[in-house]
Image (cartoon, rainbow, N blue to C red; front, side, top):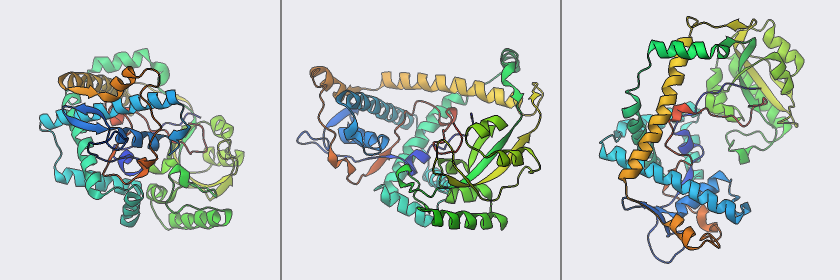
Amino acid sequence: MQMKQKSLMWLGAVILGSALIAACGSGAETPDNTVAATVNGKKIMLQEVERVIQQQTGGKQADLSALELAQARLQVLSSLIQREVLFQKAEQEKLLPTEDEITSGINKQKQDSGMTDEEFARQLKEQNLTMEALREEAKKDLAIQHLQDKYSGKITISDREVEDYYNANKQQFVNARGVALAMIAVDPADNSAQGIKQDDAKNDTDAKVKIDNIYQQLKGGADFATVARARSEDQSLARGGDIGSASEDELKQTGFPAELVSQFFGSMQVGSFTNPVKFSSPQYPGGRWYIFKLQEKHLQTENLTLESQGVRQQITVALTNQRKEILNAALVEVATREAKIVNNLAANMLANPTNLGLRPASATTAKPASSPAAATSPASSPAAKPAASAASPAKK
């Protein structure tokens, strides 16, 4: 089913799944000290590129073909160049965040993740990150956000634009019969490979004990979203368990038991949660334990008007985000033209078309790092792209 999703925060990529990078010097040509590119003289090392690829492939970069590796290196390096270009432009325009802003950003992400101080420290250690390195990367991300906000803050959307959009897209504004759900999942399988390391149940007995304990927490008045962030074994934990909205047929097609679906659309009240229930789905044929919270319920399909609650705001946000994406792309273009960029990796490929300047990715890329980098391009606004949950029992 098509579940509506909320965006992840910018710092999540740094704390929960960042690629690890080490700054290196010059010398013999090895992945550790080869300069892949420079931006106004600032070096981006080949090791940085390989670390991002390592993170993206889950450490299986050796499985890539020579052509796939070459393409991956070019794409990752392009993103790292864009990020450095934007950071330097933000620095030039005196848009660097304060130390308090950096601290607040890290603390908010830690709070939203539901991690304790001990879990947070363990997460950093597992990723070979120091707090200083994390603060430096948070500084870069916030600076880039400030730069983007400087220009996107000038966007205005007129009432006429909102009305024109509504009239041209009335079919989009329907409150279909369906329910919005949040969930806490406990999987008897080992989920460490998916990055679920906190309190991970690894067998049926532990899973049953854990889900019953969570249920007692909720009955005792614990906040559902907070518990989901801290204890759920599903990628939706980053959104407090929110998995979006679906119809009866969509739920059944993705493995929800008929009696559970009937409960959602029957007497169950919005804001309440189910007893623990275990069932299998196409995505999880071995079955998982779940507790679901009913967040919204619509028993009748309703055509929305411009005066319906939230419609004008929804359109305004959509139109604003469209303009933000264009402005962010324009910002990258202008900043790139102003910068002096030397892409040694691309030049080396052109000079060696037979093997594209390739050598195997270094096995040493797992060494401790001094700083992280986001694996995605910074050119797009973090709020403009939805975060997909890869581990819901429902199709995303």
